[in-house]
Amino acid sequence: MIQRKTNREIQLMKEAGELLAACHKELRALIKPGVTTLQLDSFVEDFLEEHGATPEQKGYQDYPFATCASVNDVICHGFPNDKKLEEGDIVTVDMVVNLNGALADSAWSYAVGKVSDEKQLLLDTTKKSLYVGIEQAVIGNRIGDIGHAIQQYAEGEGFAVVRDFTGHGIGPTLHEEPMIPHFGQPGTGIRLKEGMVITIEPMLNTGVPYSKIDEDGWTARTMDGSLSAQYEHTIAITSEGPVILTSQDDE
Ligand code: MF3
Ligand code: CO
Image (cartoon, rainbow, N blue to C red; front, side, top):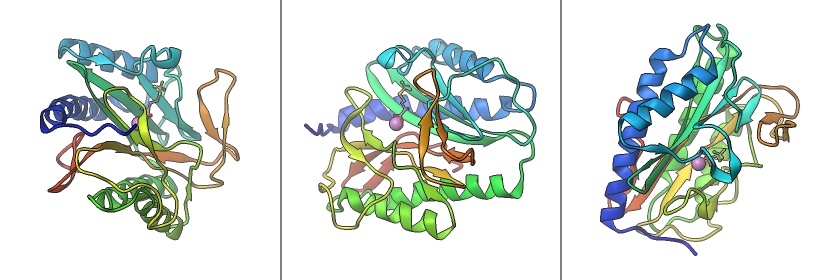
C-alpha cells in the first residue's frame, strides 16, 4: 500500500532531511586524499548522535554501518573500510537519517581531490539526471515519466542507467511502495498523488548498466569495472510541485 503523508508528517521528514543535508555539507570538507570511508562513517554516526538522530541504515536488514560508501566502480551499498581514499577517486556516501521517527534518505557523490574529465562529466551528468527526474515528480504525472526523463537524458549524454537498484517510497519505513525506476516509458505506472514521499536516486555508469555483488552480500559493482556515480534526494509530491526534503540549498 502506498502511504500518503500529512503536511505535519512531511514537515517532520523535512527536519530529518535538513539534518541530513547539513551532515553532507560537513562531509564535503572532510573528503580528501588520505581519509578513509570508515572515518567518514564514524563522523556521520557522531554527527547524528550529537543532533539527536540515528542512522537508519545501521541494522537495516543487518547492514552493519551508518553509511554506504561506494568508491569508483562500486555502484551502491559499499561497506566503509580502512583503505585511504586517493586523489582522483570518486566516492558516493549514502545515508538515512531517523529524527524522532521521521526518515530522510540522500546519497551524494564526491570527487576526491582533482578527478579526470571523464569522472567529472559522470558526476555532473548524474547530478543533473537527478534534477531532470525531480522535475517530473508532479501530481498527475506517472512513475514512468520520472524514469523516462532520467534515461533519455543520461543515455543521450553517453552513460548507462543502472536497472538493478531503484528509488522508492519512504516513511514510515525506509523502503515503501512504490518502486521508482530510473528508466522506463512515459505515461506508464501509477499516478503521483499529493502527499506521496519518494526517493529519486539515479546511478549512472560509464560502461555497461549491469551489476554484480561482492562476497560481503552487499557491495554492488559495475559488471565491467567501469565507473559509477549516484545522487539521491527525498522528495515530497505537493500541490506546489516537488519539494526536495534533503536539499543542500546551494545545489
Ligand atoms: N539509502 C539506501 C537506499 O537508497 C538504503 C540502502 S539499504 C542499506 O535505498 F541497508 F544498505 F542501508
Ligand atoms: Co534510497
